[in-house]
Image (tube, rainbow, N blue to C red; front, side):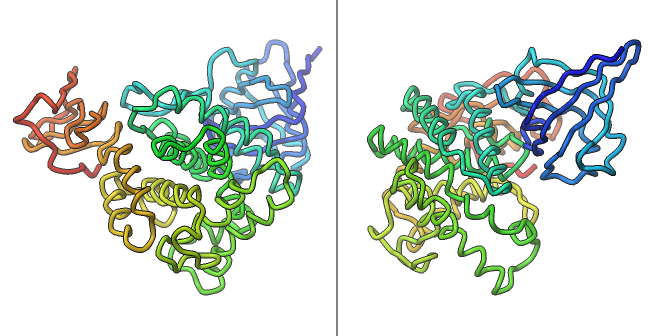
Length: 400
């Protein structure tokens, strides 16, 4: 006799990428079978079935918050979207955490903990699923995540921001919102913004691109220049997002203005309203910097990621017309141009990975040697503090 386990309305993930959701996941335990069957009923999948089929493990979160893992799964029959049939080697309640962040660099003194990162990713994915299904936007989860981010950043007021742990998430759509919120809150805290206003800043930053959910992915991820109609649609996403939130009593006006104004330029010429200077809310001016920095340092379908070093140079080159120079100065104090996780070239020709930044000495971080001057990998390398190694210094970023 077969035993069935039913998980109602689960959100489905692969690694940290949100795949979609289904009405119910049914696991059919078959005696004496190495692999057992499962059925996903009414699957709403943001990914193609072809891409889904090449994934190895699935992770699910039920409405009640229970977490499950489906290991070594295969889809057998995708002809009926209401009843997707597959097999898997194992199904059960997760005893471990979601997969660790993928990185060869040890994470030390990370400002935002992994549980909070995961909470943030889930909140964003839930919001995206609600918008795609044309349901009410779940603002409570967004406010809870903003409060958690504010609390964690407040515990390390002097830390230099390390976005590497968040950037390891697989999907730009989800990670970008969390990265922008984290960086915006770090800038806001350094500016002395009150705790209540930091909450508004965090909520607005998490929601800043919500209007893009109404624009097709073909346009958002287009390789090559946009035509005038496509560019016009892109430039409407701040207003679309603002209108989506306009009637919400749970989202404050400061947060809504972030959504509306984060593409305005400090000297004018931005969109959607061509505001300038103090006509733009200070919170939107903060998010504008965080938004561009994270977009530059993340790989997209139409271009590779830029290093923090070159991304910072681009931000500085646009100081005169795009960004508030006072806020950009705060950003530069809190972000190293060689943040933890980046690779650098030393004056000897050796390659090193940055482990820690040294506050007040952004050009002399603590590094771990990765390759010697001849390009050979170094095994069992130790950390070197460039602050005390005067004969060693960074000559620039290393392009992998």
